[in-house]
Amino acid sequence: KAPETYNPDPNLDLLASNDQLESAQVVDARSPAEYAAGHLEGAVNIDYSKVMGANGIASAQSLSQTFSGLDKNLPVVVYSSKGGQASIVWYALYTQGYQVSLYILA
Image (tube, rainbow, N blue to C red; front, top):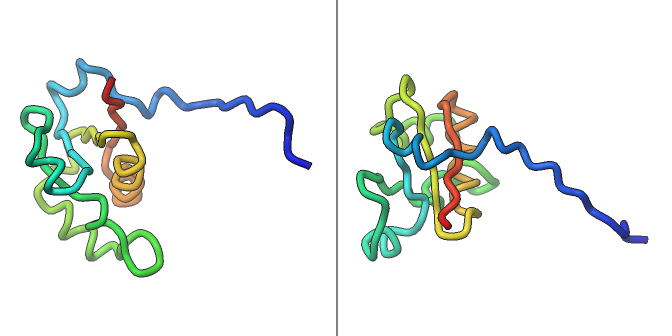
């Protein structure tokens, strides 16, 4: 039997504020075409598919190459149009030791 009530308990500490965008490295996790159509000022494009491997998240070596333009000593904020793509890139960055948060477009 399915549960009757689901009460989500989101961790709001993982979300970035508008103020954090000014001091962070901003990553747009959408496709290159979506990025080209418009993106947040200063954002770099890391397509979420670039962090995927054959069986899930890509290898550490592959991720190191994909994230080579980012500084591990600075915070990273990731966004996408609906959040799914950004969540995948967020997880990949997190596994590599980056200080990363998600930005929800409103």
